[in-house]
Amino acid sequence: MIHSRISKLTMLALLLVLTGCHGKPPAPGAMPPLPVGVIKTVATPVTLHEEYAAQTEAVDTVEIRARVGGILERQAYVDGMNVKKGDLLFVIDQQPYIAALAAAKAAVAQAEANHLNSQQVLDRTRPLVEEQAVSQQDLDTAIAKERSDAAAVEAAQAQVKTAQLNLGYTTIRAPIDGVISKALIKRGGLVDASSTLLATLYSVDPIYVNFTIGEQQWLAIKKQLGSLKKGAAVPYQIKLADGSDYQYGGQLNFIGAAIDPQSGTLQMRLSVPNPEQELLAGQFMRVAVPLETRDMIRLPQQAVQELQGRRSVLVVDAQGIAQHRDIVTSSRIGNDWLVESGLQPGETVIVEGTGKVHPGMPVNPTPVSESAGAATTAPPGGAAMAPAESKTEKPVTKPPTPAVSAGAAEKSVAPSVPPSISPAAPSHPQSSESKKKPASPGP
Image (cartoon, rainbow, N blue to C red; front, side, top):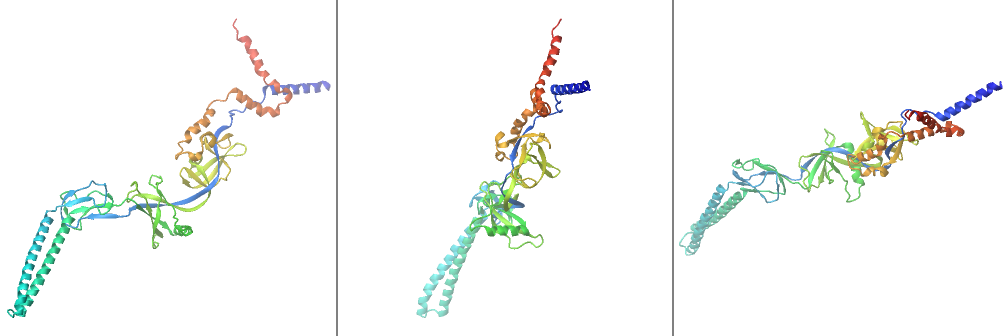
């Protein structure tokens, strides 16, 4: 009985010694926590916008037409150039109108000569009537003739004025400042008075932006306009066709008088500065109309994963484990997504290294502001984030050294090894080396 009990104790001690010497084998593929860049979610005031399709319109659109007909003699501008008010645009053949002016002046001279003769006849007739040498009828005839010749002079002078105007109309000048289209009639073409369109002149600064909104949106905008202080204006943002923001905002300067009963929309118009002439008449764009301001979480684009229309992020829990989280986003501001639901302020979201992290993996979170600079300062497109991500993940590409893996194995099995036999662990490598030493030297 005593011998059997001693044998059991001996076997138990031997088992403990062997366990302490060899330890628990490390889990296959065990790796240290993956370094990742993270940010803390913060809810900040954000103004929500709703975008509408819009189109530009020149404030002044002038059709250049001739007031007189004739052969187009000269085009004085280059197609598409900027012109100033009063600049010469076209010249129509002036010779017929020069001749017409000369004829009108000759008619004036003839009328004045006739008027002078009638005045002389009247002056001679009046004394003769007093002497009863001529009848009163002759005096009345002389008076009528003098007045008729005076009126003829005025008519001839009016013809001169008309001829001068027609001659002036042969030179066509810009009525406003702006940019002019190409000429529709080339040199030598026949121009009909008031019917032939020569070109179109567009003003450029400022420029109108027209768009339509629904009845519900109009009610929201009306409330917003009513809550503004006197003299304040709602800032409307312009987005170009390539998605970029126009540098100048627009001011609302027209609201339609009635809602279209067929479409249920209301016409609205913005006045937008255009000093650099970046906007052209007829250009399509979008208008961002501010609706409301509320606290929302903003996430950089590189933190959001999108698959089949669903968006998600990777968050780090209290135990340092990456977790998958579905989110709902409404719109974007610059390079940031606005989160409607799925995240709470104060949560840790992975923004760097998401391509190598899977849900359930242990990670080593590092704030982005410390490792790669603040995420809010990154330019659109995330170009500044790529180098920072490679720096953070570079140590992961190196295989773990034996010292690191042994240390990790010791930490994992430390609770199961008795303190009395823990020093026996390093003796195993020494015994293996002593066995190899006799085989190394040659005979």
